[in-house]
Length: 328
Length: 287
Image (cartoon, rainbow over the protein chains, first blue to last red):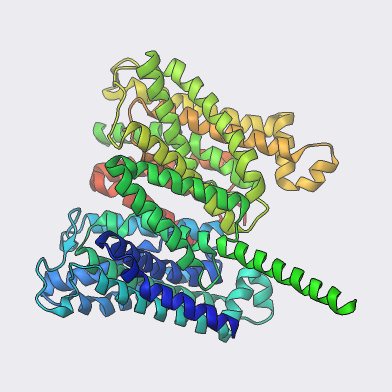
């Protein structure tokens, strides 16, 4: 009951945001927060719930982005047509690289995903069909509304909000399903989960594929909003890192953790970039790095986990007070 | 075999020796406390910039730059161990990965912010020019880097296997509680391991700075090279890292020469994935 109440308030706030903060910069900022929240929530499925820290999620992000822009560049279709194509391709890629890499545990999986991502970036950078180092562009002038090419950030804002809602709904549904229980068991101890009969390999692979598909949607939306994709913006390792860090900062393995992380880090980056200009590019990531180190050191569960804990503490305090009052 | 091919192989071996040097630092820390340092490549990058600063500000060559870079990085290693690693080691794996990744960003972009994104380079003739050996042209800077790296890596192996300090470190690696009962302090041993590992990256960075491009993002590539080397050589094995490093150096320069320079990194990454797939325990590692 109480949770429904808070959720309703949060939804009202998110819907009202672009009307309260109505400058183009603020609306764009809001849209970007939601976009990164989609990607980070998608990562959360494999990285947070299953505990398999992928540092190569940019492969799927780029796959979606390149599919969307490729549909326009090569077939003069709406980038929207590329979205399902990118999704299917991402899920297929996840299956192909997931089978060998998910057998690796811990750091080995993380390293393998880095290598896959860098390999993909190098291959695309040297493939003329995919625009090589220059990248691919979307329609410069929108032909109709299905090109999803708007000047205002407002349509993107609500589009991203809808996609984020779907992503979170899928995640929520998954966590309450048999698969969610398996995943948490695997995260805590894969060996124990296996010995109790949880099909660890298959469950991890499904989670990876689901996560990959949703990440590719985020990539396609990103490319549509910016109107282009190149190897750096679509396949750079930094994108993987950003996605991972947002989820971890907010709280990996918590439903709203990635959204909280994105709501903190995206404004931090955008505002410091706009304040510091070109010189800020380096400084932004210095701050990023420092925040991550501090979180890892002092609060590895993320901010939302900290809030939850404080909340629970308050509650027990209140309850014990209540209990004392009742007793007297 | 043509003389060019021999030259390519010799060049690969010399560079591979430097790979072996900084990778042995990664493998030491990994094997000893099961911590993967994702900032390892950026440590090497920092070593390169220390050498660059020594050259531009103090006018000194590698003779001054190399020891200084080793010292600076070894200090950083100790600071990182006590400030970050000691605590995240006990935490969930996500904390380890995040912590060292954050560190990598922090180092990379501090350098980026301070020095800019431009390619810097030290003058090529800092270490004498080039000379011919049986018709093979070898740059003195590469020869120096290769030989020093080879000797130091070998010295590291001796340190671990032939000295009391080495035995103590290996004891901690084997079972830190048991080691503690024998009067060895795991904390100090692990801090020493971090100092050695980071010092090795500093030395390696200063050595290759004389002929490599110096840029803030170089750590990303070198970090992956270190991962490949360690996974090929087996986790925790310095001799393994030595052989794997030399092998990767040769493969890289051969593929650069035979297929094209843009493909040499691709070959290394693909090799890495293939290895993780078929032999996750490495060439010389035990299961």
